[in-house]
Length: 167
Image (cartoon, rainbow, N blue to C red):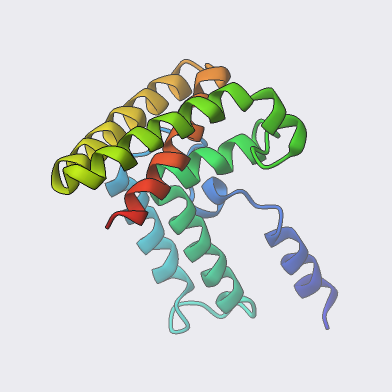
């Protein structure tokens, strides 16, 4: 295998999702801009438009980048891990944020109980609450308030799982 191709494949592993799609590394991404950047990149990588040897793997990496950045929860988790080196799955981080996890768990239990007696209303309340948390998460990222970023990311993780369970 050619040394340039090997270097190119190795370098691809270290390109951020934002860089890969030509976007600034910010949480507050306009979904239309993200979609346009993704489609433009995929169009440039198409077999008919590109003569690069690693087009297929780059296209696959673009798909992953797009899917990660498209959703606020996965975008926040990605940014916490790659930019701030905070992995919410690490034991030390879990212990540090145990109180936040407990609070998020209590919130989900309340929605689960409500769902038993009022399924439609509880689902609507969960979705509305999810939208509020996403707004709070965006605000926290804008202010670089990492404590609240982690708090709202944890809440969003738990609430998203709860909504998925009930739909």
